[in-house]
Image 1: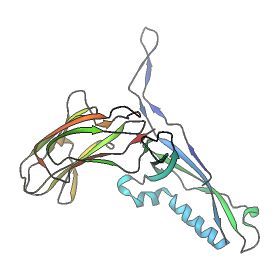
Image 2 (image 1 turned 45 degrees about the horizontal axis):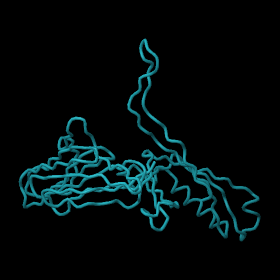
Image 3 (image 1 turned 60 degrees about the horizontal axis):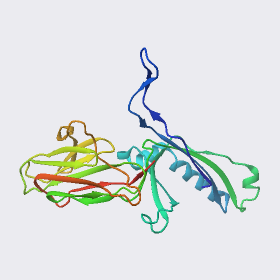
Image 4 (image 1 turned 90 degrees about the vertical axis):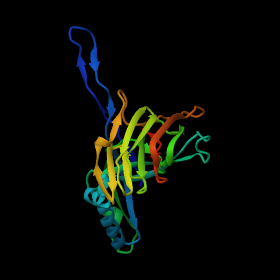
Amino acid sequence: LTRASFSEVSVHGYTEKRSLDDGFDASDVFIGMRTINLTGEVFASTKAGLFDTLDLLRLKFTPTDAYNEDPNEQGYLPLSFQQPTLYTVYWPTGIVDRVVYARPSMQPSFDIAHQAIGGRVDDGDSVPFQAQLQAKDPRFYAPVAQEVGLAGTSGNGTLQNRGSYPATLNFMLALPASTTGEAFFNFVGMNTNMTVTIPAGAVFRQVNVDSVKKVCTLVVDGVETLRMDLIDFAAGYTWPKVPPVPEGDSPAGYDWTSTLALDAASKMFYQEAWV
């Protein structure tokens, strides 16, 4: 890989001329998709090895192959990289691992030139290529999620996002089969005030709150079902996000309660984010 080009990120919202007045009205604004262009070169010691590797490269940068590798994420796979930083309080090694979730938007282009592959079968050969990917979520993330356990009936604490952009906060809430009643989980903090219902039952029940996809699902006996009726937000609040914490500042706080004791597997988790 010789070059990675990251496009500008589109902005989505509207502006409308004010009626009989100066200026414009504007809506809420959101960022859109990111395009990533990769440029590189395939090398091999033999022509046969070169074209075999080129076949593999084309396959891995084919959108349908990416989709088949992870249908649940529609083929948006982690593209990992590292970059240096001066924020050594947060990153003592001076290196930050990051990942962006991207899917090829088309097969890669490649250029087979006589000067590059030569006329001898056993010469070292090369073929340059270009590949274009799209990241429907333009954010860069820390590859390892931060997790906090939620066992019991209440808790509080702080969450730290060392990135530069709010990080979506997700939940996995469960009740054991021995707890047959209905439970109400309330979480306050991280710009939200939400209540999640865990239905009654005589089996292990798990409710997943995905703040990235903005869905709430119920898992019973290994079957996951969309259940948006199980989540409710207080007026003026929406899906939780962990705000970024500049170096030296205090992390954001939270409080939670549950009317019944949550299973020990329950947790909340997030990936620190940049944009």
